[in-house]
Length: 283
Image (cartoon, rainbow, N blue to C red; front, top):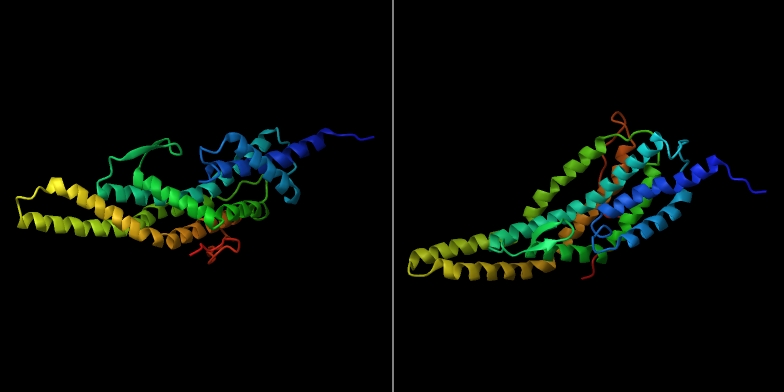
């Protein structure tokens, strides 16, 4: 006769609830899976399917009642881990969007803003365009599959445990957030440099011919030069954005390993050149 005890029921609940917390947190924070255009039913179904696949391969579960305070703390800890891994990829798209904001303000398109459902705020047209380009690159190099692979690998490097994680990973995430500003400026540098030269030329032209209406001809010229430079530099944006995806996914992969170490044994992690599953972008 088949008998099911309360301990067996708690084990079944824990084996699904704890990995599902980390998976759903990453799905909600990642730039592609967490898009507001994706229905919530699809997100939850994907998370449950991944949890069912991952649960049998996860190491031994902690002997904690999932409905106790300790079990709820494990759920919160797993959510923090998943959110941090997904947020490390979201920072790359934030850097690309910042490059678009800088380009828009330099071109004079700062007034051309649209409602962004992801951030629930206003973003410029150039920023949304570059964000769509980054999304297509993210899919074309199979970075979304590599991200899911890093998520599954995290259950081996940082198993579900009732021991609090080491907080050094949060500092690494904050340091990685500084790349938003440096990368945004670097990506927008060709447009800013071209428009700087254009504005200097317009200033010299106005000085030589004061009868010219600078406000009448300046805006169309800067707008045209900006769009022309974007069209010229767009084919060359694939390599730097792909390198950003490599760094972001590697950060997400190494972050659980950093959290599982203590300050006295933690070693500085080195970024690899390329994750094995990431495919190069087609020429």
